[in-house]
Structures are given as structure tokens and as C-alpha cells.
Length: 168
Image (cartoon, rainbow, N blue to C red; front, top):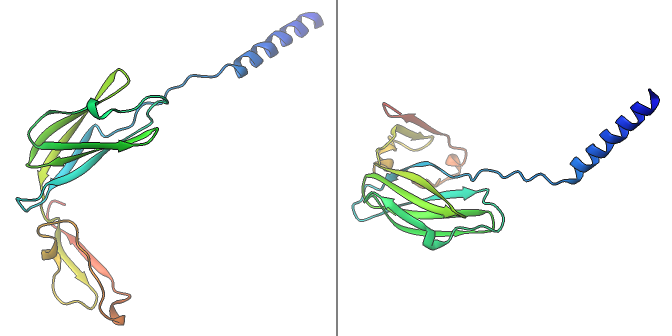
């Protein structure tokens, strides 16, 4: 009985060592936005710009500029791409509301991201800042970006209070 246990434990130990020394080839899936929503600027002259971020690209593989294309839709136009060894960004411009598709190729596999371009709508009903009179929501009528500065020491500890518009 002892000889059988000794041989069995040696066999198990040898199998465990072989398994430990063998590298596991686990490949992580490529991460990217399958659907991206972009809001258009309200000015007819300006183009909207956004990016698709791609990560977990396997070693020794990359995304060539020639493999990045607008597949469909007149909403998405210009493309540029930049990245490092395992992380890439595909930048794109949008010119009108609608839907477009961007495809890129990693190795032999092609990935597609759907871009939904929507008109910008002011999401704020009211914005108030301590020490500033009036509703500042109108400053966000044409863009979601705005810079506020305080003018005196009383506003240094100002509090901003926002109320969302209906449906937000």
C-alpha cells in the first residue's frame, strides 16, 4: 500500500510541476466602444470631434492607418489614429446628425464601431452660483463646455447648483 501511495504521489507531483512550467496562452479580448454617441456643436461651421479608444491589443499586432475606414454613413468624415504598443485611439470628425460606422483591423480580424451623431440639446434647466445673480443655464445653450471664474474673495468658496431639464 505504501509503495502505491509513494508512486501515486510522485506521479501527481511530476504532473503538477509540468503544469506549472507550461505557460498558459490566455488572450484577452480587445476592448473598444461598439457604439459611441457624439453630440454635434450647434454652430453649422464647427465639426464635432471624438475618439474610439482601443486597448488589450495582442503583442506584435497593431492597427495600421490603412486598416481604419469609414464603412457607412455620411455623418462621420475625417479619421486619424495614434497609439502605442497596446493602446490606440481612432479620432474622427462628425459633420451632421445621423449614424456612421468605423471599422479597423487587428491581425486578420475586423472590428466595427457604430457612431450615433445627435444634435446638442441643453441638459440644464437652471444653473446658479453663490454670489452671481441670475440663471446661468443659457451659457450652455450652444455647448456643453463653459468656463467660470470667480472675481473676488467672496466667490472663492462659491457653490454651483444645477437642475436638470425635463427628460434628463
